[in-house]
Image (cartoon, rainbow, N blue to C red; front, side, top):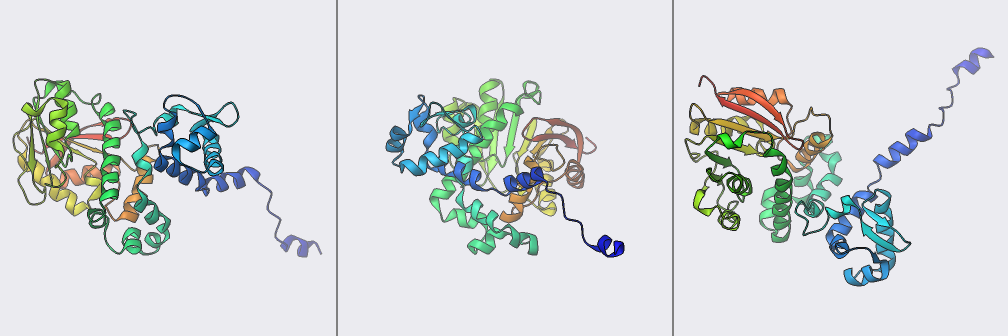
Length: 344
């Protein structure tokens, strides 16, 4: 009898903490609640202070009962504050959802196609193919090119991320020792404009595809640096990168390339560099302690845009392109890898 009882599987212990942990991990309600208030622009209506739910519903043209339920859910995560009852205010996190906040993150939560692709993540896991193509029938940037509103949202999200990164990037390298900079794949030229504004003796160029740098001249004029900045239109795989600069920057570019493409792009930059030039590759890394790199790597998987690398993988790619690694500078958001031409 004892042998029979021993063969009966023991009942698993009730682990409420594990149940709660798994339920929280699988609860996408918070993510979609955040995207809903970002789309509606709720934070903009709370910029001047707390508002009663009736006033807030009228201003946002929302259903009172639907809005209060979403706000109360996000108050659990300290995005909003409810005090007194039925009256809501912004927390420090909620402030970042304001459109006019200098470090606004509102645009990060308005990329609808990304959400649909992530919902089909299992397709990428099963096949290794982009879930985005499976859902939409074409690749990510081809789809964006034919959807003006979403393309603008994507650009705004990149500008918002750029503003956050620029704060930390400026502190991680001795820019004041350099006289010229070329931002390869620099989009609207925000990084160059920021550097030139801070360092009056510096000149700079942004190098990117013609359609991508369309706003760069306006960015330079608005920053008051148009006389020291230039826009160079080209494709890093086919066209010559501006030669002879002190510093070349590639920020969040290589994450979208496979290794072969990354080596080719880096080789084109290496050809433009002089003996004393420095290349600063700024990318999220997969082996950092936080989850940003791992999360971005999953997004790259479903969008079909490359992958997030480890530090060692980046060093291998740099060496394959004829570049020698000099130092690594953590910035808090991205990691800056400093390199020079091998044998320089």
